[in-house]
Image (cartoon, rainbow over all chains, first blue to last red; front, side):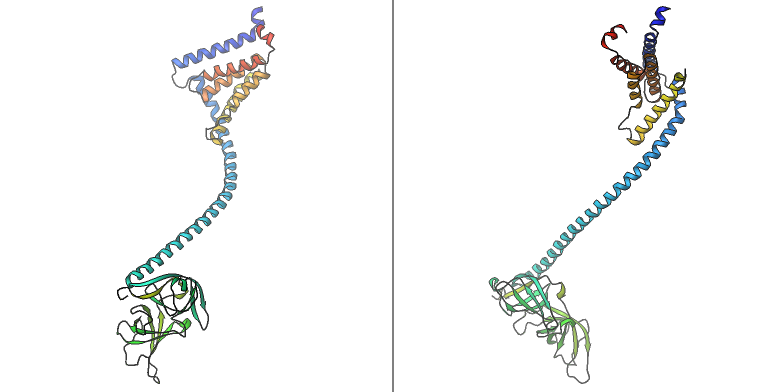
Length: 275
Length: 97
């Protein structure tokens, strides 16, 4: 009895160890699913587990929402930044694509017309009330001379009027001082296209008895030796027959949109075959 | 006596909380072993009988709720308790215990 009283704590621990060992050995060898005690513990723990789960989940959800919202602001900022960057990049690529398209058209024109061209970039526009000119980035050093015709996208742009060493000024066909000898594509009626500034242009010296209707295509006739034949000049917008005049009043919309002109071709020589 | 009555309830509560916290906050990737902390604390602070009983009950409840083989965590917890309990006893007395 003295022994038991003196070493009761040690005996208690040893018994617990033995019990645990026996339990482990037994369950390792004869594990038959949930035992009786295990079931009791599980049943007893179920309400606490539910409560703990609910509580922790509620706290967790609140925390998650808070963190999520904080992250959302940051994410929103990042996404906005990314969108801006991507938009800038997209704009850059679109610009490259449209430039390629324009240059491709110019190249196609260059090959189809069979003339020698010098490609130039528009660097300035002078769209004043009296003057309709553009400045291009090529000059006499590149072989440009005054009077050379300028084309773009199969359409007539104008002609060089002032040529410097590295830049040149182009008088557009819409300028009041510009006159181009033209043909109406459908009826082959000849006339003169004269610039009218913002209103585009008009056809002069076409008599009233000629067949001209709105929508007729106007092309360069090649006469006068300045512009080659067959370049698009514009389209007839309106035809009027004034009683007191000899000629028709014909308004023309230019083929080229001069406000969007970025690259042009300068005709530097006659047709390659003729040269 | 009160200790013996409250110990199972406390152990169930603690382990249920431990499981819930580990499951929800860390999606089961990180487990905070509250029961283990309690056992180690018992090893340092409680006397042998109370501490051993705590380790046994905690281990058993943990086995029942989490463990696959009943008895494994009971034994581990008892061992851990014993190790920590012995570390608190001055070296010459260990030989006597």
